[in-house]
Length: 599
Figure 1 (spheres, one colour):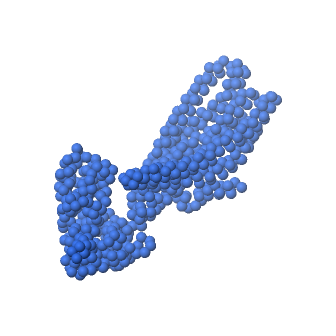
Figure 2 (cartoon, one colour):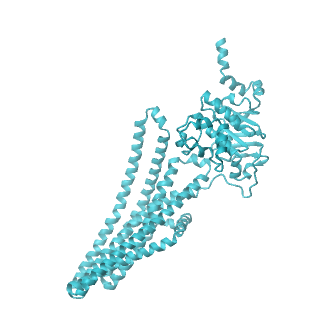
Figure 3 (tube, helix red, strand yellow):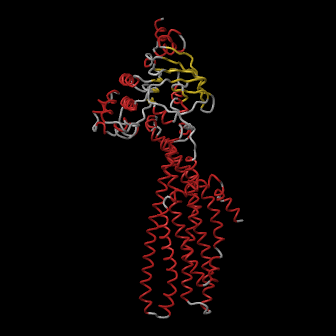
């Protein structure tokens, strides 16, 4: 019966290998604070000794002072009681401090480890997981673990030692009454174990609902401009209210289940105390024990049921923590799809040739790239053009190994890029994307991002080359100005020029420009284009662009249609072919429409 309950409760996870490994990792984190744990255990022992002494002292108080009229005891016993409660208070403080220190340290290490793992995972992982969900894992789920590690361990140390000490006193005073007092405890723990199974299931649901809520908040806050532009404030409010209602329902369900454990223990504790009063009272009436012994025994029984009841609540905390352990370690144990080679080859920072051979790539359903062959020699510019969805940005993502090719290979100087470490490879590549990503730091920090050793003079030089120095100088604090989240205080052109300055200071020999000017107006584009020309100088460059005016001067142009290279050549040679590039050129410059009007 008990074995089946334990199995159904989910405690069988302790016998599963991968869960046991997770537990060992938690214990390893606990052991890093073994010194403080020993001090916490000593403080817990002080609390249990004081608690035990509190129950035991009732006997001499009644028998010596009230019954025997001992005046010496009248002076000494109150002093002893004061000392006992001082010891208990001191122990409680030390235990609380040391165990919470351990708990907070473990949470800090787990958060660091979780963030470290998330940062090392490939882009495909971030496409599968919502940002708000990942934020919830690091904040909410890890915080629940703190309760399991610190609060539960603290309670267990204190309560188990108190129970042990009080049990010794109880059996010492009257073993027959002790048996009566303890006979109901095993029965009381059966419903507590059953409730623990439900607590864990509901806790998992609550944590998932909290993750969904975090994801919802991230999406609506990030897209607040769109929400307002379409007048959807009320719609989003209703969606949010629905999310909070779902979370509320699960939380209340959890409250109902968790709240049952304490009343059940209280009821069974009352049964035990009733037996003690009936049996102990009869022994006092029959003269088999003294009133002081009986009252001391009764006090110890009352004191022992409190830590027993708290232990039942610890089970709830542990079950919630175990649900959080699963969610946290599901991420920690996730392996990145992009791995460094076992025996990497060196890659020097120097001009490089870049080549793609029969490259195929799929995100899972159908090939995005279907046998792409491209070459760009060192110092040259390769432009990729074509309609949206053709696979141009996918090519840009494969070069720095944000993804790995499904078939074929990408080579730098005749060496497959998978033979280099990720750090060496990405050190050779600078990227400027359509959406300029900046951080809520100073202008200086954003430009020097990835190049922390850069001097102020170097930062100003690249800012001038990116045509950013002048507008930076107009800021209240110049290069020390904090630009806001994602650079919200800057215009699109200003943000893009800071990104170009960031790429310049990295001074990587390979450059990828992914629609770097497509979101800018004509005036901003003209300035940014000048900055890009400075950036491209002397670098092996891959340019992705819709506007053909930005790629006309490229050394080589490839037209990508449905994952294939359908045409290659220079601007002039491609126009002469009168193929796909010619169609794009005529459509973009409105030549066909002008011809129709003239007719």
